[in-house]
Length: 344
Image (cartoon, rainbow, N blue to C red; front, side, top):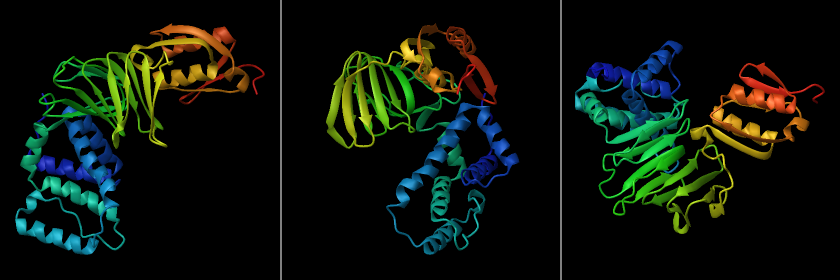
């Protein structure tokens, strides 16, 4: 059962979260917050909500012109008029040079909290939004309609309380595999950054990781529509075996045949290599096993490999590669080095 918190405890936690996001906590306070987050998923969702509000200020600040000093005094006056100081987080008047973006972030958190700490507690207890997050491991879960999904590491999926009433809309950050329950009356819609993906019932893969320079959609079964969010006329329709690539650099959307047999290896732990260069084999291993394997010389990088690894551990795969290609394996911290005698 999740631990219950009093209003004062929630006030303290919000103050701790705010200072953490501003990089103003001690190591002891950081450990306290991390322990609280580890207690249950609800605490993590609460933190994610505040973090989203904190980060959203960056999107707004470039579009606003404001007299920081005047606005701060105005906000102070409004706070004092409330006459309920125990429900307000104390923040000193900003000194000269106080960063504008930080002030806005504090204000965003404050505006959320002014509703009252009790309201915030019940808001997050019965949240309007559900966020499922995969941390250091893949995470499988389901949606209210019975559709299932698997999130790769460091990915998240968000949906609100109205999911399924008119449509089935989710917001994706990262990498996911969906198996969607068919429903011709309620389309399944994924907001994947710059693109919108719409389906009725199918299984498919999306990679919308922020570190990539493109968004990928690969269809395993059924039919999927992929459209550029800012121009819905820029769209493609995919069926089994098709792949869509949306290039962020020039907003181009392409439909291609999928040639990557390992696109779901992070989920299935099945890797197939047919006459692939070892540098590409290593790239796939690093993604699937979250490892840091490096090859010491070009001669090894360009060697060709043909293997199928089905649910093998990384150690087992490395030993097979070692025997096949007469390699040496060295370890340096978290780095695994593939080398051989005479390697330059």
